[in-house]
Image (spheres, rainbow, N blue to C red):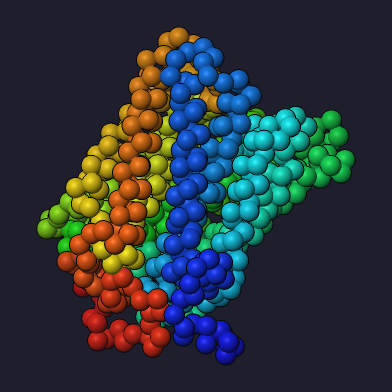
Length: 536
């Protein structure tokens, strides 16, 4: 909190009413809610695009759309899901939970917090508006490789570049805010090794964001200059190098995929101990493993590029460093399993999603190890095997953990319990849908079906049909989730106690449910509440 008296006065008041509350709010809970609602809307838009893609691939031959529109859908689906659904959802959770978990009254920079949210609707409004422009939306895949995204791109690419800049600014401001809050506003007595795992994972994620977002800004600016100002960064005819684009992009892109999974590790590290009724096994090793993953994420980027003609030494380096990153990830999986071992487990909805996360994320990790083997990658590269791999770590990984986190904390946010039966129904439909969609893709990938194509050879027809049915099952089952959330917001459910879950630990469970508009005006005394956080 600043010394500015007006701000202090603002924070002492009750929330404003009407639209002003949401436009001008500096309250971390309001901003967290806006992030979460925005990401849900983006999830539904991006999911609808995925269903269009899967409808086209239901049968071989061109069925519903032109190949150009198909390419636009694959591109926008990727961009919206990564930057519009997964990342804002984690930022929304950070906003809601970090101040409550560390015992702070609010985020360190409340006005920047408001601004970093309000940049997003405009950025994504701009991305979606490209669908209605001459030449259509971006059609070069979410990785936007030059020269497809420069020389051969539709005119709308300029709008896309501008919107990526705005998203990047929002992410950097959010990251600065998280770091400032965690480092400066912890309750007295909460040292770094007493911080909850979610706070740890977000601190590390925020540093990753600060490190790589400028790289993305740099590469899209170079694209802009190639398109409009006659430079040749990525144009071989002018002395540039298209492979350089891939190096710069993936130097951003690989840490980015860890930005999307580290907060998920934090969420699951809260849920599993709660429902296993045991402290988290190996808290210190979890922190070290998370830090190791973050460090290693910077030296593995070229494993996306084994087929570009790298020197053999380069291929070997990136192959071994990629395999090395599996070690700290394996440590985390071991710790979660060890936490569950001989615990008095119950299987409420958050726990079901968390267990599914551990199992399916591990499958995604193992297919990643297969892709890390350079000579094998020549076979797998640009096939549906890659699609299967990253969807197994992003959907049952990032998305399941977000859903688990929402079910886990929504009683604290709204003050009422969600419908447990509906939650379990949602879980089983999602679980079956996800596996039905993405598991067959391993097989069609190994058999050689390329990515990002609207048509395919006849031998892939059966598996593609199964995958499309699974996608519709998974997509439509999310409507149950949306209904369940809306019922909680409308206060249609049993009132929740402050503790909510029998053995939940942490400062957020010491305040009322719903959490008051302003929490921890006076810092909490950690000794009085016997705060353990994974320490026996």
